[in-house]
Image (tube, rainbow, N blue to C red; front, side, top):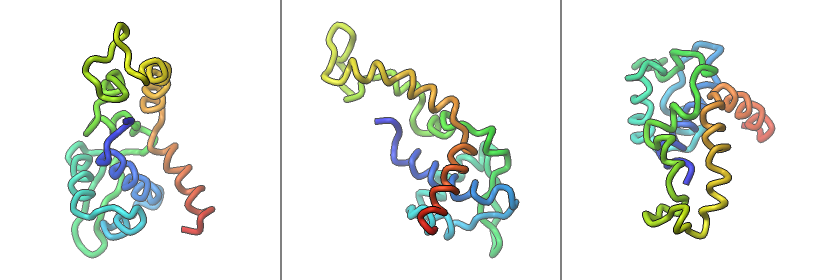
Length: 144
């Protein structure tokens, strides 16, 4: 409802890559795949969208992989979400019903209406850096 599986995979891969941002090291596709438990081919395809847009840099070879080309504090969730799920998709019916409107609301209409703007604000104001910091803290607690 909030974003697609592709967006979920992309965010998870970026967390792994971002965890190495300060070192400047490339993160291998195998490391991303193992740490985030993601399918290799699809994840590679998704990451290449960000390489094309110069958010990530990729390097082939034994010490290659991916790294952020820009600071993760300057990359916001709405940018990542917009590759596969435009932010405007939050304006639609939560159940995906085409008849849903103020005049003919679905069962979730009023609840979704109250959540819509806070969700948009979350995506627009949350940077990847914020999520990376949380990822580091939480993954250390779990012993990863």
